[in-house]
Image (cartoon, rainbow, N blue to C red; front, side, top):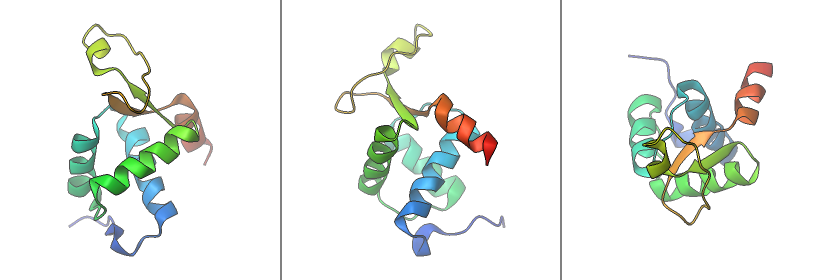
Length: 102
């Protein structure tokens, strides 16, 4: 068994960091449902997808994640979309640089 802690006893800030760390480490762009499943499977997340949406909104407001058009990805384009539109979440360059400096 790995040494990844269960998120049950984590405070909100630690859960937000868990989400950001996963996006930075993997470099992937994922829809909320897929991201949630991967966090549950790979990081033992115990929070709901509703909570995840809230964390992603916060990270987006801080400029650490962006939401991108999934259809544009099919054309190898990265086009940001509004949070209310369908899309995938991805860590920003700012988030990656912050992770390197820590």
